[in-house]
Structure formats: C-alpha cells, structure tokens
Image 1 (tube, rainbow, N blue to C red):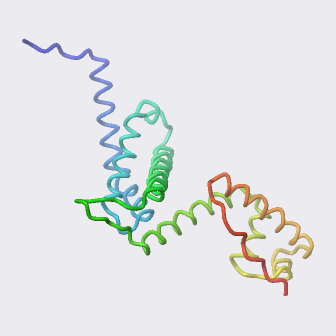
Image 2: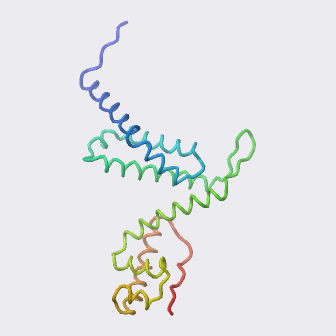
Image 3: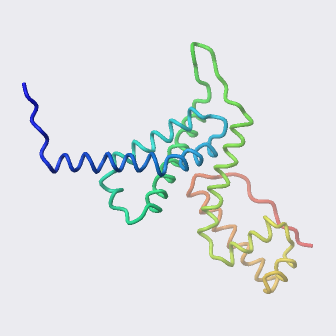
Length: 195
C-alpha cells in the first residue's frame, strides 16, 4: 500500500509549525529555563517540566503566536504562561504537600519553599505596584521601602506632609485591592514612621 502525500498547504503548515517549535526551543528556551529556575530554585526536574508544559501550550496556540508582531511579544506570552504554570503547581502542591514515592513520604525543603514563595510574592507585589499612579507608588516606596517618615517623604517629594498622608492612605487601599485581585491576602503593612 502506498501512502498518499499530504496536500501542499498541509505540508507548508507542518513546516511552519516545525520552524516555530525550533525557534521557541532555540531562541527562547534558555531564558525561559533561567526564569523558571528562579521561580523554583533547587528543583531542576520541576523547572524542566514547567518549561516543557509552556512549550506544549505554545505549540497548541502556534497559529495565534506566529501572528505576533515581534519576538518580544512572544517572550512575554511564554514567560506569563510559565509563571501561571508554576503558580498553579505551587497551589496544587500547597493543598497536597505530601507526595509518595515508592511508598516513602517525601517532604519539600521548607527553606526552598520559603524562598520560592518570597520570589513569587515579590513578583506579584511588583505587578500590583504598577497598577498605582506614579505619585501613589512613589509615596509607598519612600514610606515602606526606604523607611522614611512622613516629613522626610514630604521633603524628598516637595509636597506637604498632609498630601503624603492622603496619598499613603489611598495607595494602601488601592494596593490592597490589587493584591486581593491577585489572590494575596494577609496582614496589613507596618505603619510608617511619623517622627
């Protein structure tokens, strides 16, 4: 029995997809692997799994992704998907922290878990801060990151101390809303110094 060759458009589509897959792995793979390894330090196997899952999702959406106007858009898409896959894995793991391998319990390294959660929280916080206006973001950075008093912030920004207090109040409320929308809840930030 002889095989019938695929029609020309199907061969062209297969070649385009193969070229797309080669481009993903060759040009985006190393950077994506470094990014995921920072999200999941000390777990190279899981890093590889997440990178492969990201490439699989890209392959499934090849028609959409080959239409992107530049490689930077493709990289942003890949990094966002990898981040989401890592977060999904962490959430699943948090609900089932104990895994069984050969009937022996394997417990995650608590130090590595804390480090990963800190990295992910920093990323979420940075994206939430981007939703604030520049004056509100600057006020929070001066008060909480640089640990300055209201008077010091007022002097640094060249605004009245009352404006600093007002911006701080609004910024904390908006940041809390942005973090809640991203699934982060918890303690209120420490009060800034008033001296």
